[in-house]
Image 1 (cartoon, one colour):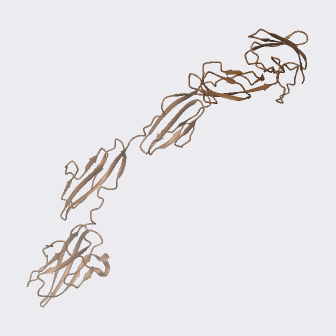
Image 2: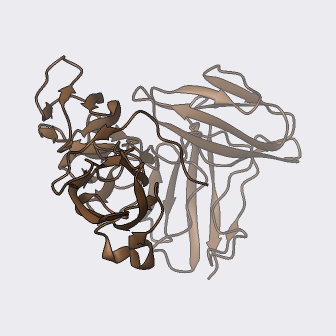
Length: 399
């Protein structure tokens, strides 16, 4: 189907004229976006036939026509020499005319949306040769426009065929912005995950890793370099760790005589939360079992400690004192354990058979395992610090 002309054409003067009449080439279309052009001859009444040459040899057989009002499509814009031989009763006439075919229709004259580095200047240059005027967002009319701020920019271009508008989005990429935070002091055993969440950036940590987060569980200086295609930013922090809290804050495991209660407490400045959720500074055990508490110091570091309380039949005695131990690290009878003794209530002195003191404790905790003592017979002196009552006897160490 041949497209219809969009508006009246315009006459182009002829260069070679007949002596009997004055025909001329008439071009019906010449606006941007047209692909086919309609030609005719005005004053064609006395003509017998026509032979057209559209000056477009690249179109092959379509470069010629014998129609009175032919159509021809030009693949590219440019200047073409059109020739037509007009045949009539008395002979022929050759008409020639140079015509300018516009290029392809205006599309995306401002280019694609773009992102530039912050501080750059972006020049919009449509470069439309057939433009009659330009108009930019600030009402300026230059053929170029300089962009320094992010936003959507448009241009309105007027040609002989009417106005055309195009727009483009221009963004600017700033250096990566982030902070790892202030230097940190953590409790022993704690860890922290550094994850600054930086948009559109590549990560490089001090250990060479490139993930978006880093787990910190050791003291040291940690840094991150974040990079985008424009620039890099680096930040660092120092992480230190407090000393571990002491062990056995609730004291050693205890063996008591049946019917005796035991008050468990911790020495030092701690807040406690016991296994039953209570928060008093002590807990009274009245039956066998393992009791635990979470202990928090003033620096908000917390450790969990536990103690096992066992009961034995002491046969009516205050204490049951063994007379043999086997410190061979098999977990059975390795220590000199005074059944019924509450931690912190006894003083203990142990002598060899020559009367030489080999061990002494003002706060005996059932923990002597005959370190640096050979097998043999030893003698003990045990005293209750509260009642000052003393107990004497012998003890055999078997290895």
